[in-house]
Image (cartoon, rainbow, N blue to C red; front, side, top):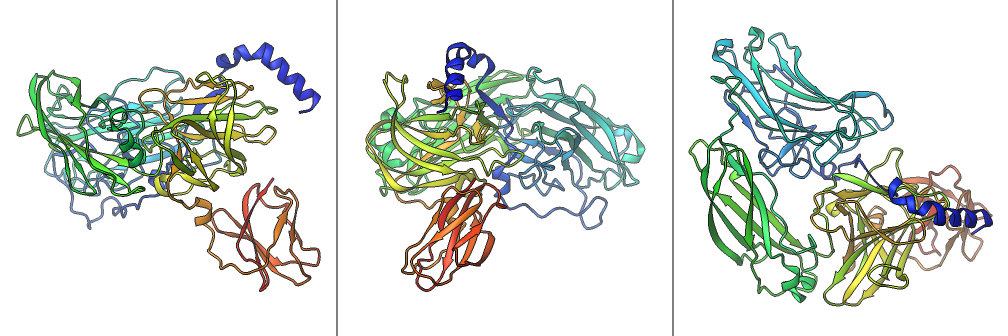
Length: 629
C-alpha cells in the first residue's frame, strides 16, 4: 500500500467511517436479467390479430394467472413478453400475476444502451374475442387489478401502464393508462379498474385488448403487475366483488432457516432444521364472511412415501381480507437414499370450494421442499440486485454465514449475478471461505480457509440459473459455522458488481460486508444469492462451455497470468504449435500458429477469463485458463 493510499485510508477510517451507514455502502438495483425466462422454452406465438385461423373466444373471459407455467396461457393470450410469477408482487388478489418490466421475452433488456428515453416494452394481448352479438346495451365491462413496483422497482416519471382496445378497423385505441410516480413514493396495494365498452366499433368478432408498459429501459426494471382480469356483460361500475376465495401467497419452506440443504445435513439434526410451523395465506374476495376448510398433506416424491396424511382444519374468513394459515410441522423418518442423493418433499395445500361459482384453479397450491447439494437461503428467484458502493483504493468483501450439522466437503460456489449495463464480464473478483470473521460472533480475527482467485461473473443458464465455480482442491469443513463470499479487489474496476437478491427472504440474511477494513452486518433485507456446493464433484460452468480435448504428453504453460498485451507460451522444444483462444462460452476468439517467439498479442481482447489451447503431437492439449486485464 503506497503512502497516498495509507493517508486516504486513515483519513476515511477516523473521519468518514461513522458516516458509512448514512451514505450507504450497500445498494440495491434492478436485476436487468431474468435467467428463469431465458432458460425456458417459449410457446409458439399466436397468429396476428384478426386472422381467420384462430377461433375467437366468447364471453366471459377470465384470467387470474394461477397456472404454474412461466408464460401466459396460450389458450387465452397471443404473446408472451410478460412472465407469470408470485414473488415479484406484494399481497396479490390471487396467487400469480402477470409481470411487466423492461426485459424482453428472453429475459434481457429491450435496449442495453438507451437509458433515459422511455420506450414501449412488454405487452400482453388477448386472443380475439367475439363481441359481434353484443352491444353497449349489454353493459360489457373489462375489470382488472394492477400494482406498481411490488418487490421490484417503481415505474418512474415517464413510465406508464396502458390498455388498448382493438376496433373493427384493425387499429388499437388507448382506453386507459396510469403514469409512473416520483421516486420514493409509497408502495400501494393492488388497485381495481373497471372499464365499460361503449363504442360500437369495438363490438366485432375479433375484439382484442392489450396491456403495454412504457419503461426507461436501463435505469430501472419499471415493474407493473396485472392480476385477476375479467371481461363479461351485464356488469356495472359497482361490480367490484370478485366472489372468490383462493391462495394468495406461496407456502413457506419446511426448513427452519435454509431454503435448501443436502439431505444428509438435514438428517443429522432434523429437529433444529425443521420449522415449527408452515405458513401460507388465502384471500377472501367476497363481500361476506365464509366458513372455510383447508387441507394439508405431504409426500416424498422420490419414494412415494406419505409424510403427512391429509389433515383438515376449519376457520372463518372475513370479507375482503387476507388470512394467514398455519400448519404444524411433521417429523420424517425417511433415511437418506444415498449420501449425495437429491430428495424432494411435495407439500399440497387445498381449500374446499365455498360456492359452485367460485373459481377453483387457485384452490390448490403445491410447494416442493428440495434437498440437494447446496446450502441456500434464497428461493431461486431474484427480484433485485445487491452490490457494494466501493472506494477505488479499498477492496470490498461480502461473506454469508452458513452452518453444517456434520463434517462435509465444499466443492465450490454457485452465484446468481444481476446483469449490468455495460456488462460486468471484465470485473474480477475472488471467492473466499472463512472459519471466522474479525468482530463477528466474538471472533478476534478473520481466518481464511480457502480462496479461488481472480474469476469473473457470467450469466449462464446452468442448473438453477447460477454460475458454478469449482474449487481445484476440495475443502474439508468441520461441523459448525463457516462463511463464504466474495472479494472485489482494490484498483480492479470491480466496484458495483451485482449479485442476485431474493427480497422474499424471511428472517435474517446472515450477510456481512467489509469495505473499510471492518466487518459489519448487512442492513439489506433479503438473501444474497450465493450457494456453497457440497458433496460430490460438480463441474464448473466454464468447463462445461469448453470442448473436451484428449490429453497428450508434454507439459506447457502460459505467462504472465493475468496478462495485458502479450501472452507467452512456454514448452520444451523448437517445434511449432497451433493455438486457439476461447472465451468462457466456448467461442473461439483467436487462433493461429505460434511464431519462433512463442508469443501472441492479446491487447485487443476484452478483459475477462479465457482458455488457451495448444495443438501439437508432443504437447498436452488440455486448455489452460488465463485472465486478460
